[in-house]
Every structure is written in C-alpha cells, then in structure tokens.
Image (cartoon, rainbow, N blue to C red; front, side):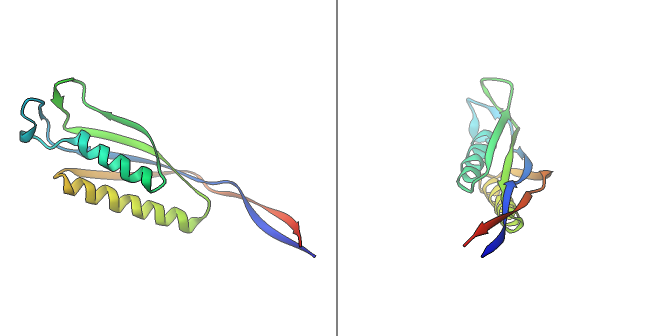
Length: 125
C-alpha cells in the first residue's frame, strides 16, 4: 500500500525588525536614561529561547553614551502556518512585555520572505 505524504522542502521564512526606544544618557549617569542596549539584550535572549534567529543588533555610536535607540533584526523559520502564527504572536508578546518592564518602547515589524514549499512524497507501508 502506498500513501502520499506532504513533506516540507523549504520552510516559511519571515524577517523581523525591532526598534527599541529608550532614553539616551551619559554612561556616568545611566540612572538618567532608559538603557535600550540592556532592554535589547533581554529581548534577544527571549527570542532565541523561543526559536527565532537574531542576526543583527545595532545601537549607538559612542563608547560612553547609552543610545536612545537600538535595532534588532532576524529571521523566523517555520514549517507550518500554525507554528508560524504561534511564534510570531509569542515574539510580539515578548518584545512588548520586556520593553515595558524596562520602561522602554518597542515596535516589531514582520516582512514575509518566503512561503513554505511542499512536495508530495509516496511512502510504502
């Protein structure tokens, strides 16, 4: 007996872009700011634990100033639409809650890059 099963050849691929808004301050007076680097670091850790790949983290242009803004980018790969939806919803919740916990604000934007490609594969049983 032969059954036809669907196999994923290429996963859904979605690019994400996060902008974290803190409050810049001199490194000698960090209590006067909202540290977007620390906020972003916690977001990166949470996203990695949730299975997203962070591929870019950029903020500031001085060694002694807390930057007011940080950009985090990366990619989500998922094999089916329900996993894609769950992961993107979880990422949105994590980003929002972590930013709020640090007194910062964050915007998360998604850019779909590729739909999953499937092929039918015959299997004998």
